[in-house]
Image (cartoon, rainbow, N blue to C red; front, side):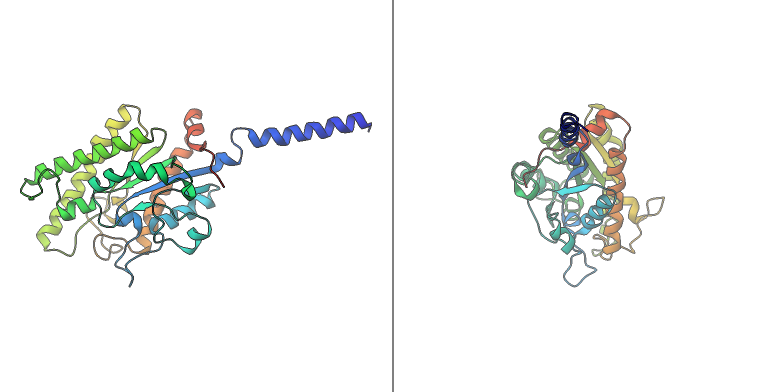
Amino acid sequence: MSMRLFTGVIAAVLLLIMGSGNAPGANAAKTVTIYPLGDSITFGFSRATRDHRIPGGYRAELYTLLTHAGYNVHFVGSSTRNPTINLVRHHATQHDGWPGWRIDQIASHVKQWLARSGYRFKGPAYPNFILLHISTNDIIQHFDPKYPGKNESESQFMRDMESRMTQLVQELVTLRPKAHLLVAEVIPLGGWSPKIKSALWNKDVREFNAFVKTHLVPACQAKGERVTAVNQYANFSTPTGKPIWKHLPDKCHPDSYGYRLMGRTWFKAIMAILKRPTATEANHVMRVNPVPR
Protein backbone atom coordinates (compact mmCIF):
# COMPACT_ATOMS: atom_id res chain seq x y z
CA MET A 1 0.00 0.00 0.00
CA SER A 2 1.39 3.38 -0.98
CA MET A 3 1.83 6.13 1.63
CA ARG A 4 -0.80 8.25 -0.14
CA LEU A 5 -3.36 5.41 -0.09
CA PHE A 6 -2.57 4.60 3.55
CA THR A 7 -3.05 8.26 4.52
CA GLY A 8 -6.36 8.35 2.66
CA VAL A 9 -7.64 5.26 4.48
CA ILE A 10 -6.70 6.72 7.86
CA ALA A 11 -8.42 10.00 7.02
CA ALA A 12 -11.58 8.19 5.94
CA VAL A 13 -11.67 6.17 9.17
CA LEU A 14 -11.21 9.33 11.24
CA LEU A 15 -14.00 11.08 9.38
CA LEU A 16 -16.28 8.10 9.92
CA ILE A 17 -15.56 8.06 13.66
CA MET A 18 -15.99 11.82 14.03
CA GLY A 19 -19.17 11.81 11.97
CA SER A 20 -20.76 8.98 13.93
CA GLY A 21 -20.13 10.82 17.19
CA ASN A 22 -22.05 13.86 16.03
CA ALA A 23 -24.83 12.14 14.13
CA PRO A 24 -28.40 12.00 15.39
CA GLY A 25 -28.94 8.77 17.29
CA ALA A 26 -25.43 8.66 18.79
CA ASN A 27 -24.87 8.09 22.53
CA ALA A 28 -26.81 11.18 23.62
CA ALA A 29 -29.86 9.84 21.80
CA LYS A 30 -30.12 6.99 24.35
CA THR A 31 -30.51 9.35 27.29
CA VAL A 32 -33.96 9.82 28.81
CA THR A 33 -34.53 12.60 31.36
CA ILE A 34 -37.41 12.06 33.79
CA TYR A 35 -39.05 14.39 36.32
CA PRO A 36 -40.92 12.48 39.09
CA LEU A 37 -43.43 14.93 40.57
CA GLY A 38 -46.02 14.57 43.31
CA ASP A 39 -46.51 13.84 47.00
CA SER A 40 -45.41 11.10 49.42
CA ILE A 41 -46.16 8.42 46.83
CA THR A 42 -43.51 9.94 44.56
CA PHE A 43 -41.20 10.28 47.58
CA GLY A 44 -41.57 6.62 48.54
CA PHE A 45 -43.36 6.86 51.91
CA SER A 46 -44.67 3.57 53.32
CA ARG A 47 -46.07 2.33 56.61
CA ALA A 48 -44.81 -1.13 55.73
CA THR A 49 -41.38 -0.31 57.25
CA ARG A 50 -40.17 0.98 60.61
CA ASP A 51 -38.83 4.21 59.17
CA HIS A 52 -41.94 4.68 56.99
CA ARG A 53 -40.19 4.70 53.66
CA ILE A 54 -39.27 2.46 50.75
CA PRO A 55 -35.92 3.77 49.43
CA GLY A 56 -36.38 5.04 45.89
CA GLY A 57 -40.13 4.38 45.86
CA TYR A 58 -41.25 3.60 42.30
CA ARG A 59 -38.19 5.44 40.99
CA ALA A 60 -35.86 2.55 41.84
CA GLU A 61 -37.79 0.02 39.75
CA LEU A 62 -38.27 2.48 36.90
CA TYR A 63 -34.54 3.24 36.81
CA THR A 64 -33.65 -0.46 36.75
CA LEU A 65 -36.11 -1.30 33.98
CA LEU A 66 -35.03 1.58 31.74
CA THR A 67 -31.32 0.91 32.17
CA HIS A 68 -31.87 -2.77 31.42
CA ALA A 69 -33.73 -1.67 28.29
CA GLY A 70 -30.58 0.17 27.18
CA TYR A 71 -31.34 3.76 28.23
CA ASN A 72 -29.17 6.21 30.12
CA VAL A 73 -31.55 7.61 32.75
CA HIS A 74 -31.33 11.10 34.22
CA PHE A 75 -33.75 11.99 37.02
CA VAL A 76 -34.28 15.71 37.70
CA GLY A 77 -35.93 17.62 40.55
CA SER A 78 -35.12 19.76 43.56
CA SER A 79 -35.00 16.97 46.19
CA THR A 80 -32.61 14.04 46.66
CA ARG A 81 -34.29 12.51 49.72
CA ASN A 82 -34.94 8.78 50.14
CA PRO A 83 -32.67 7.25 47.46
CA THR A 84 -31.38 3.71 47.14
CA ILE A 85 -27.67 2.93 47.16
CA ASN A 86 -27.92 2.16 43.45
CA LEU A 87 -29.58 5.50 42.69
CA VAL A 88 -26.89 7.33 44.66
CA ARG A 89 -24.16 5.45 42.83
CA HIS A 90 -25.57 6.52 39.46
CA HIS A 91 -26.45 10.12 40.38
CA ALA A 92 -30.16 9.32 39.96
CA THR A 93 -31.50 10.66 43.25
CA GLN A 94 -33.41 13.74 42.07
CA HIS A 95 -37.20 14.10 42.20
CA ASP A 96 -39.94 16.34 43.57
CA GLY A 97 -41.97 14.07 45.81
CA TRP A 98 -43.25 16.00 48.84
CA PRO A 99 -45.14 14.12 51.57
CA GLY A 100 -48.42 15.75 52.52
CA TRP A 101 -48.51 18.18 49.61
CA ARG A 102 -51.59 19.04 47.58
CA ILE A 103 -52.10 20.14 43.98
CA ASP A 104 -52.01 23.85 44.85
CA GLN A 105 -48.73 23.47 46.76
CA ILE A 106 -47.02 21.66 43.90
CA ALA A 107 -48.34 24.27 41.46
CA SER A 108 -46.91 27.14 43.52
CA HIS A 109 -43.37 25.70 43.39
CA VAL A 110 -42.99 23.86 40.10
CA LYS A 111 -41.76 26.84 38.09
CA GLN A 112 -38.86 27.54 40.43
CA TRP A 113 -38.05 23.84 40.74
CA LEU A 114 -37.75 23.42 36.98
CA ALA A 115 -35.64 26.56 36.73
CA ARG A 116 -32.85 25.22 38.94
CA SER A 117 -33.00 21.43 39.18
CA GLY A 118 -31.43 20.05 36.03
CA TYR A 119 -29.45 16.82 36.10
CA ARG A 120 -26.96 17.09 39.00
CA PHE A 121 -28.47 20.56 39.62
CA LYS A 122 -26.68 22.06 36.64
CA GLY A 123 -29.06 24.66 35.25
CA PRO A 124 -32.77 24.31 34.42
CA ALA A 125 -34.44 20.94 34.05
CA TYR A 126 -35.67 19.94 30.59
CA PRO A 127 -37.22 16.50 31.09
CA ASN A 128 -38.37 14.25 28.31
CA PHE A 129 -41.00 12.87 30.68
CA ILE A 130 -42.86 14.37 33.64
CA LEU A 131 -44.52 11.75 35.87
CA LEU A 132 -47.31 13.40 37.84
CA HIS A 133 -49.13 11.57 40.67
CA ILE A 134 -51.10 14.06 42.78
CA SER A 135 -54.50 14.64 44.49
CA THR A 136 -54.35 12.16 47.39
CA ASN A 137 -53.73 14.86 50.00
CA ASP A 138 -56.38 17.14 48.52
CA ILE A 139 -58.89 14.38 49.21
CA ILE A 140 -57.57 13.44 52.67
CA GLN A 141 -57.35 17.05 53.83
CA HIS A 142 -60.53 18.02 51.98
CA PHE A 143 -58.84 21.35 51.43
CA ASP A 144 -60.20 23.87 48.96
CA PRO A 145 -58.45 27.27 48.77
CA LYS A 146 -61.79 28.84 47.81
CA TYR A 147 -63.46 27.53 50.96
CA PRO A 148 -60.94 27.53 53.83
CA GLY A 149 -63.73 26.78 56.27
CA LYS A 150 -64.44 23.46 54.50
CA ASN A 151 -68.09 24.36 54.15
CA GLU A 152 -68.56 23.75 50.44
CA SER A 153 -70.54 20.86 49.00
CA GLU A 154 -68.83 17.64 47.93
CA SER A 155 -69.62 18.34 44.28
CA GLN A 156 -68.13 21.83 44.58
CA PHE A 157 -65.03 20.41 46.25
CA MET A 158 -64.51 17.98 43.39
CA ARG A 159 -65.06 20.62 40.71
CA ASP A 160 -62.53 22.93 42.35
CA MET A 161 -59.96 20.13 42.73
CA GLU A 162 -60.37 19.23 39.07
CA SER A 163 -59.95 22.89 38.16
CA ARG A 164 -56.72 23.11 40.17
CA MET A 165 -55.46 19.97 38.44
CA THR A 166 -56.25 21.44 35.03
CA GLN A 167 -54.34 24.59 35.93
CA LEU A 168 -51.32 22.58 37.13
CA VAL A 169 -51.26 20.50 33.95
CA GLN A 170 -51.46 23.64 31.81
CA GLU A 171 -48.65 25.21 33.82
CA LEU A 172 -46.43 22.19 33.18
CA VAL A 173 -47.33 22.08 29.48
CA THR A 174 -46.56 25.79 29.17
CA LEU A 175 -43.26 25.56 31.06
CA ARG A 176 -42.05 22.44 29.21
CA PRO A 177 -44.09 22.01 26.01
CA LYS A 178 -41.65 19.46 24.55
CA ALA A 179 -41.90 17.13 27.54
CA HIS A 180 -44.31 14.21 27.64
CA LEU A 181 -46.53 14.73 30.66
CA LEU A 182 -47.79 11.43 32.05
CA VAL A 183 -50.70 12.08 34.42
CA ALA A 184 -51.56 9.28 36.83
CA GLU A 185 -54.97 7.94 37.55
CA VAL A 186 -53.97 7.82 41.21
CA ILE A 187 -53.89 4.75 43.42
CA PRO A 188 -56.79 3.78 45.76
CA LEU A 189 -57.32 5.57 49.04
CA GLY A 190 -59.11 4.45 52.19
CA GLY A 191 -58.22 3.19 55.57
CA TRP A 192 -57.48 4.71 58.86
CA SER A 193 -60.46 7.03 59.34
CA PRO A 194 -64.10 6.00 60.00
CA LYS A 195 -65.56 3.72 57.34
CA ILE A 196 -67.90 6.32 55.91
CA LYS A 197 -65.02 8.73 55.25
CA SER A 198 -62.82 5.97 53.82
CA ALA A 199 -65.56 5.03 51.38
CA LEU A 200 -65.99 8.68 50.43
CA TRP A 201 -62.27 9.11 49.89
CA ASN A 202 -62.06 6.32 47.34
CA LYS A 203 -65.25 7.52 45.67
CA ASP A 204 -63.45 10.85 45.20
CA VAL A 205 -60.38 9.05 43.86
CA ARG A 206 -62.41 7.21 41.25
CA GLU A 207 -64.26 10.37 40.24
CA PHE A 208 -60.97 12.25 39.95
CA ASN A 209 -59.42 9.46 37.88
CA ALA A 210 -62.41 9.45 35.53
CA PHE A 211 -61.96 13.19 35.09
CA VAL A 212 -58.26 12.73 34.24
CA LYS A 213 -58.94 9.94 31.76
CA THR A 214 -62.09 11.19 30.02
CA HIS A 215 -61.86 14.99 30.24
CA LEU A 216 -58.48 16.45 31.20
CA VAL A 217 -56.16 14.37 29.05
CA PRO A 218 -58.38 14.24 25.93
CA ALA A 219 -58.77 18.04 26.09
CA CYS A 220 -54.99 18.43 26.16
CA GLN A 221 -54.48 15.96 23.33
CA ALA A 222 -57.10 17.78 21.23
CA LYS A 223 -54.84 20.84 21.42
CA GLY A 224 -51.82 18.80 20.32
CA GLU A 225 -50.25 18.72 23.77
CA ARG A 226 -48.08 15.77 24.82
CA VAL A 227 -50.22 14.57 27.73
CA THR A 228 -51.10 10.94 28.48
CA ALA A 229 -53.14 9.28 31.24
CA VAL A 230 -51.44 6.40 33.05
CA ASN A 231 -53.61 4.03 35.08
CA GLN A 232 -51.80 3.48 38.38
CA TYR A 233 -55.10 2.71 40.14
CA ALA A 234 -55.38 -0.62 38.32
CA ASN A 235 -52.26 -1.93 40.08
CA PHE A 236 -54.26 -2.08 43.31
CA SER A 237 -57.80 -2.93 42.21
CA THR A 238 -59.99 -5.55 40.62
CA PRO A 239 -61.09 -5.17 36.97
CA THR A 240 -64.32 -3.61 38.29
CA GLY A 241 -62.40 -0.99 40.27
CA LYS A 242 -62.75 -2.41 43.78
CA PRO A 243 -59.58 -1.64 45.79
CA ILE A 244 -57.21 -4.45 46.70
CA TRP A 245 -55.36 -3.38 49.86
CA LYS A 246 -52.80 -6.21 50.02
CA HIS A 247 -49.92 -4.01 48.88
CA LEU A 248 -51.29 -0.79 50.41
CA PRO A 249 -50.71 -1.51 54.13
CA ASP A 250 -52.25 1.77 55.33
CA LYS A 251 -54.71 1.91 52.41
CA CYS A 252 -52.81 4.87 51.01
CA HIS A 253 -49.09 4.15 50.48
CA PRO A 254 -47.64 1.08 48.73
CA ASP A 255 -45.28 -1.49 50.20
CA SER A 256 -42.09 -2.39 48.31
CA TYR A 257 -43.93 -4.66 45.87
CA GLY A 258 -46.58 -2.01 45.29
CA TYR A 259 -43.92 0.53 44.40
CA ARG A 260 -42.40 -1.95 41.97
CA LEU A 261 -45.81 -2.30 40.34
CA MET A 262 -45.98 1.47 39.95
CA GLY A 263 -42.48 1.59 38.48
CA ARG A 264 -43.42 -1.06 35.92
CA THR A 265 -46.54 0.86 34.94
CA TRP A 266 -44.59 4.09 34.40
CA PHE A 267 -42.01 2.06 32.45
CA LYS A 268 -44.63 0.62 30.10
CA ALA A 269 -46.10 4.07 29.47
CA ILE A 270 -42.68 5.56 28.74
CA MET A 271 -41.66 2.72 26.46
CA ALA A 272 -44.92 2.98 24.53
CA ILE A 273 -43.91 6.54 23.64
CA LEU A 274 -40.24 5.80 23.02
CA LYS A 275 -41.15 2.99 20.65
CA ARG A 276 -43.71 4.92 18.61
CA PRO A 277 -43.05 4.43 14.89
CA THR A 278 -43.56 8.09 13.97
CA ALA A 279 -40.13 9.44 13.11
CA THR A 280 -40.73 12.99 14.30
CA GLU A 281 -42.07 11.77 17.64
CA ALA A 282 -39.19 9.36 18.16
CA ASN A 283 -36.64 12.03 17.30
CA HIS A 284 -38.23 14.43 19.78
CA VAL A 285 -38.24 11.98 22.66
CA MET A 286 -34.72 10.71 22.21
CA ARG A 287 -33.01 14.04 21.68
CA VAL A 288 -32.08 15.73 24.96
CA ASN A 289 -30.31 18.96 25.82
CA PRO A 290 -26.57 18.57 26.43
CA VAL A 291 -25.88 17.83 30.09
CA PRO A 292 -22.74 19.20 31.78
CA ARG A 293 -20.59 16.50 33.31
